[in-house]
Length: 174
Image 1: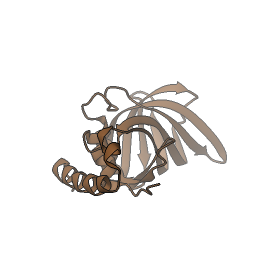
Image 2 (image 1 turned 90 degrees about the horizontal axis):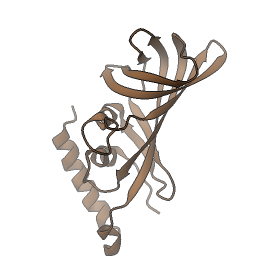
Image 3 (image 1 turned 90 degrees about the vertical axis):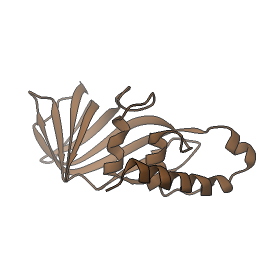
Image 4 (image 1 turned 180 degrees about the vertical axis):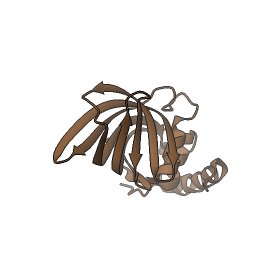
């Protein structure tokens, strides 16, 4: 099990190594990047009375990528993604993300825009409380992709979001 302490220790080591590759002036300024996330699941179901979306067969990793000019991309464990709803001024708790769900209903593709809140991971099931922004949510569907809106994170280990991301990324430095 990954603990916050092990994430911090790993992130500090990675940050120190990455810092040695940068020019001294680059270390002085804190670089921010906007990260988007993608999750996939085998199926979904939606309980209209509780506004609970459950992704079944959720992938063990969540894809992330940065907006230009950073061009950083990689995968993180889905278990490491959930803490982005913890406390903090740049967390999803203070500003829940929008997401676009692409859901197959038989042979028809349905897209629904939602706000994601209160994630709960239980094995290979990930549940969110959702607020529907656009579209109609089906009761069930298969082959689900969730495209999650940005979170601004520093490229330093000073925030928990930065720590979690840094611990699991595979990046190419340009």
